[in-house]
Length: 201
Image (cartoon, rainbow, N blue to C red; front, side, top):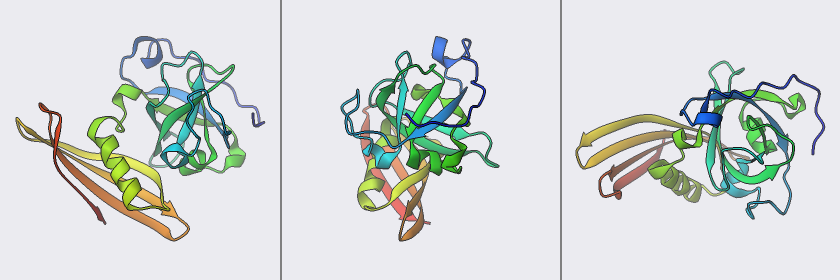
């Protein structure tokens, strides 16, 4: 594991999502790692464009789940969505070890070592459901880019059988940065896709 300057460890918030799954953000900390070839989840750290995380053994999050992290020290709250691919020893539930790429995507220098963040419960993550499917479309449509940020813009009920969700994606690569908007319309009762669209903005 990497060695970082000491920072006071944040207390485990027993009255929040980790203990009672109350769907509320939890204050925590993240460190970073380059990962390794073998993980407890049998998933590579390169999953989800290296937006990946190792969680504590007693964490409520499980292999393959997504977690949204917000840098509460950034001016407008930089966010990333990471996928659970590994487990780390001796960490409390509100301390995570994320890939270095994800750490940098939060807008901080890796030399910082430890960063205070808000952890959004997995059940409240924007990565679930149709948003996750749209994310994979964007990843496929823009090979060579990594998704640095991901936000739900709007969620609108069009009718009893049609729901529309709009998302913004910030993509980064050596070729430059792109801003993408994605719209998806689906039938919430039948859980069936009606249409989707992605465009550069």
